[in-house]
Length: 135
Image 1: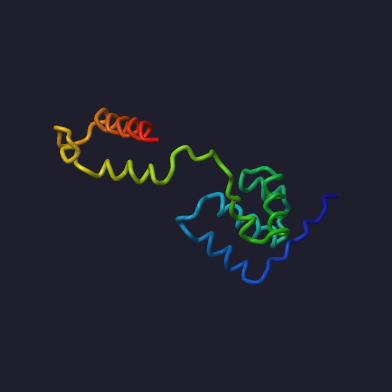
Image 2: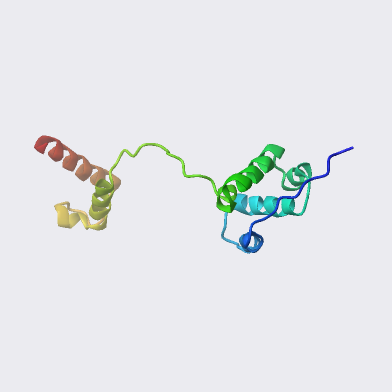
């Protein structure tokens, strides 16, 4: 005989918050599914049924529920920020690249009116060489 599914108890305001997320059209699909998972578990829907309905694994359902129980709603719905790849170009360099791209090439001594990829790369490389000489 299968075990009866135990419902989770949603915290104050979570039901309305989850329902509002589900109705939004601009939110990520995975967030909507996670909101459905929490609402279904609050209504005692078994984990296997939830996994079958949303075509996900039971481990995904259990992870979502355990994150909710331990850390709250936002932890269950949204992924944590990851460290990611280290930055190879500084914010100042990005700002400089955008600044140069927004200028007319003629203002910087080039004969053409619009940037070509080749001329843009040339000015970038020239500037890098000048910086290396000065450093």
